[in-house]
Length: 373
Image (cartoon, rainbow, N blue to C red):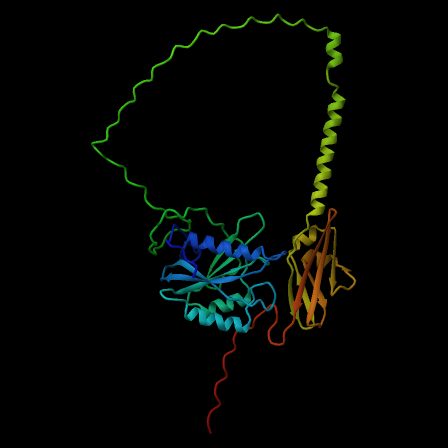
């Protein structure tokens, strides 16, 4: 169980449409941010996604989050947070037995390889596993940027792009009691400890310090001034004045050096392009952020180390391409070139006999028993 020794300051978030309020412990959410970024840094090109259970209390007008538990994921389908049947079975047992004094109210999932949008599998599991209304927190870690959070109450809203926020920085030294649940506005409020009361003591009196004695400063005798310099002739002044053409050449050389250094930098830094692969029969649909593909001057795709083919203009503009392959293990490589920079984004897609690597079917209801004779 990951929970701080003291609850610490809380922040509040309110669902825009229903007014449902969520109070969450900032130290707990900062710990969640740390766990998600540890997975993000484990491997390049998106890291390893992870998730966890959120524990606290829930009421008719809101809920409070005080702790979290990590969810065990075997990553049978790759580095994304895609739960297998065995993972879901263990998750049900973990929700039923979270620990003494703990109650599961929802879960969090990192989306380091995709956008802040709840997938179909996540919506089905949230509605099936957690008590109503289920809360889902999506996290999007990025290099050299703050992690963005998106909260969802229920499964009707799935796009968190317009509702994302970053955590405020707080100190853990100031304890704060757990807040009571009551309706508030949509503004996020940080609850802090009240200031210490002033000290009133009649025995303590303010006494002005006595002035320190001033020492007599010795007299300072100024040295004699040097004789004034003789003015140089106008002819010498004109010969020693810097030439404007030299300054212009020096500035042009400095600008050229800066442009050359910038060109070397952008050519050395690769473009990270996340790939998403879904199966449609014997075909695989590969997608990536369309704005990155449109900005590239040349775009190709390669399947299992074959000859790379040029992407069609409509594929490049939409950020999707179809690949025909019935193999159980397919390696897909996207090659983008832009301003002398070249990026190779590689993903391996594994087919399974029971479950697709990119979707999980909802649980089927058991068939009714046949009537007796």
